[in-house]
Image (tube, rainbow, N blue to C red; front, side, top):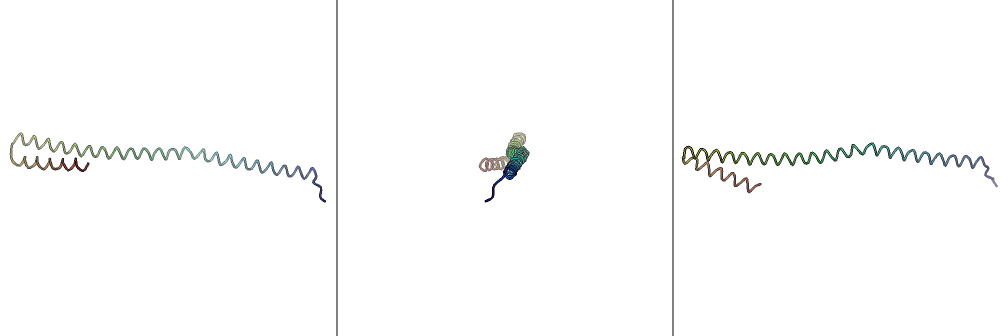
Length: 107
C-alpha cells in the first residue's frame, strides 16, 4: 500500500492553486476584453440609429421640397393668369391642379 506523504500533498495543493490562479487569470482577461469591446459595440449601435434618423430627415426634406415646388408652380400660374388673363393659363392651372392632386393622393 502506498502512503501519501506530505510532499505529495503539497505538490497536489500547489497544482490545484496554480490551476485556480490560471482560471481566474483567464476569466479576468476575457472580462477585460469584453469591457474593451463594449464601447465600440455601443458606438456602432448609436451610429446606426443616427443614420436611420438622418435618412428619415432627408426623406421628409425631399417631400417638403417637392411640395414647395408644386406650390410655387401654382402661384406662378396664378400670377401669370392675373397678369395676362389668357386661356393658356387656365390650362396651366388645370395641369397644376392635377399635379397637386396626384401629389396629395400619393403622399
